[in-house]
Image (tube, rainbow, N blue to C red):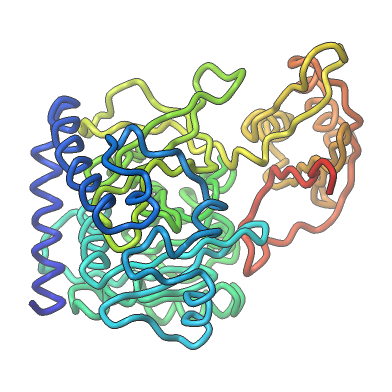
Length: 426
C-alpha cells in the first residue's frame, strides 16, 4: 500500500470513528475490545508483560518513565535497549520499517520511542482527522515549530497529502519567522513561546488554524496570539508516549479516547485536579500500558457545544513535579502543595501589565518571583504579596523574594513559568 493510500484509509477510518463514538457507552465498548487485544498482544510479545503471566489489563502494574528507561528492551517487541536507540538517533538510523526518536526533555529526563511505519500513519491520520476538518483533497501547508524533528513529521510529506515544513527552534525564532513568511502556512503548530514571539514581532503570516503544543498554554499567551492573528488558538496535547488530545473547532480540548484509555488519579488536596494514567491501545511495537503521566489536568464536566462525547479538558495545568511543596506553618502537620495554576494565577491576576513571569521554588521554604524590568515596583511588590497570600491560604509561610530581569523564551528548552527547582537531598 502506498503512503498516500495508507494515510487516506487511516484518515477515513478516524473520521468515521469520530461520528460513531457519540456516547460514553460506545466509547467504553470500543475501548474494552481494544484493551483486550492489547492485553493478549502484550503478554505474547512484550517481555515486561509476559513475565507477569495471564492477568487482566487492570492487573498490569502502573509504570512511569524511569521504569521504561531502565528496561527499554522489555517494553518493545524488537528487544532494543535504550543504549541501542540512542546510538541509532545519533547516527540518524532506525530499524527497517520503523522509526526511533526522543523527547525534547524539560529537565534532562528525556524519553524514547520506537514506532512502526504503520503506526506512523495511524498517528498522522488520527491527528489530521481531529485537527484539519475538510476535504481530503484540500492540501494544507502545515508548519511545525519544535526543538527536534523526527520521521513522525516527515510522514506528512511522504504521503503527498500535506505539505509540511519543520522548523527547528534551536536555529532561533528569527530564522523560523523568515522561513514561515516564505512558506505561507495554512496551519501553524508550535509552543506558546514561539507563537507569541511571532505575534509580537509581526511575522507576516495568516494561517487559517493555529495549534499550541509542547508547553502549557497560559492565558496571556493565548490572548496575545488570538488578537494578533484573529483566530482561536487550539491545542494539541501530545507527548513522547502518544497523542492524548486535540481541541475541537470551539477550542475545547478533547482527550483522544478513540486511541488511548485514560485512568485518573486525584491530585491530593485538590477536588477537581487529576493526573492521567494512559494506555495506548493502538501501538504494538512499543507498548505503553498504565503509564503514569506527570501532567495535571482539570477535567470539564460540561458537554461541549461540538457534541463530541470524548472527555473534555478544561485546562492542562502543568507538570505535577512543578507543584510547590512547602512546610506547613503547623509543623505537626504534613507539608502543603501549591499546584502550578495557583501560583500562576496569583501572579497574573495582580495586574494586567504582568504578561510574563517566572516563579520558582529554590529551597525548602523559599520562592523567587522574576518579573520583566518594565514592571513598576509597586505592581511587582503586589505580585509578591499575592503569592504570599496564596501560600497562607493553604497553611504555608515561605520567604518570597522578588527579582527583575529580561525574560527570554529559550530555543531548545520548554518554557516553564512555574518551576520547582528544589530537590530534597540534591
